[in-house]
Image (tube, rainbow, N blue to C red; front, side, top):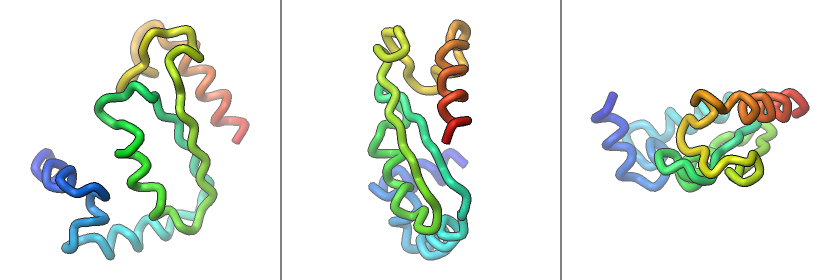
Length: 103
């Protein structure tokens, strides 16, 4: 799995730019028909905006809503990657789940 992701990370569009599987992956993403809401921490160094934004153009048959979460909005100095799951992040997690429940 590591080698696959390492290979795909060399492409700006990940597997969508990999000629061996791009058509197959595009077809799979096009089958998604449920609404999608994403919430991303702007200080996530492992999954920056450019990384998750690379996938959005391939969800061609569903409604897509994106939200960038800034640490200051939650009273935190940082959120980072998987920050919702850290001890002490319960209020942040609850607020995100409440917001997702409204979409």
